[in-house]
Image (cartoon, rainbow, N blue to C red; front, top):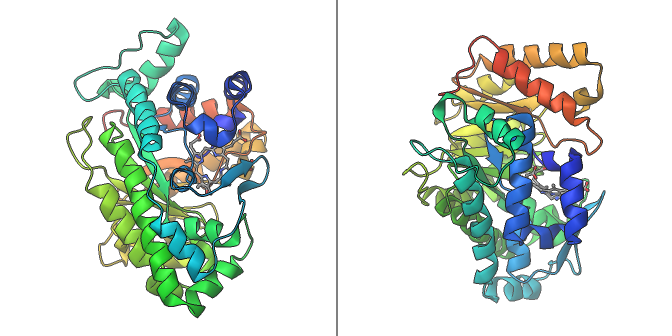
Length: 365
Ligand code: CP3
């Protein structure tokens, strides 16, 4: 669950005690590892998502960016002209920062275990340990999921300089100066691919590419100006080998407002497709089936707004989601987008329990 951590009191305590900004916190391996484990311990979810942010590799590449609470990523200066793009792609990436991300991932993997090797859980209280045992299920370990932002979403932040509704400046650059767009998108693909690969080499078992803003593109523009670069990012990430599983990571590709491009997202090289809450899972399954690569597991797609409804309503929503997920060859139950910060964590715990209690849930799957 994206940004699940911020609804937890233990998350807010850990952040306040450290006194670090969001992006500084991401580069503190001990703190990032601790925050990554919190939702697993509390909710017993079946996987952890590394506490980091899609903007971290850009920060490490020298971009002056911070995350403003309630706003999102804000840059000191947008990257728009050919000169600015050339300066960006010429700067050498800072290697040390990626090492602190990898260190956080390694610490998490020690706690979460690997096939045939249960996690250490040494420094945990009995209650915390119990949380991890639940998620480990019969398999005895809990996977860590690596992630990164897709090139278009990263380019949208770089060009706009802050969150935007329609990404007009980014899409204008795409049409007006295709060669600068190509340089920028290729760089974003390499940088985010390397960020994901570092997490996988540190032990993450699967990886997810977030194209949060891909829904603002027409299918034709997506295919022509975006999909090749997402394919490159997935390729770079997918070449990494996970020491936890001894295999390359299965790749999940997610975006919002993507009903009309789900097949293209699958064909970018994804093994599973994440579906947002504006698209029905049945509709998504049909769309993906029509891709060149064919049907694949789907992830999603509870409406985050549902989390604030009375429990019987939430419960019915979860049932519907589970039933709809049957249309795909596999289903990872998740939200359609981020957890609203004011969410009652107890609701999330109940949803996880309900999904685990559903008839055909298999902890070994
Ligand atoms: O749950 C987790 O902690 C997983 C790690 C994670 C974070 N961000 C941590 C985070 C993941 C997977 C992300 C992805 C991310 N970050 C995306 C793609 C997914 C999506 O939501 O579409 C995007 C677009 C970002 C950029 C970003 N970072 C936004 C829009 C925000 C929210 C700003 C706000 O306050 O509304 C962030 C901040 C952020 N990233 C938080 C966390 C835990 C919240 C920080 C806080 O307020 O304490």
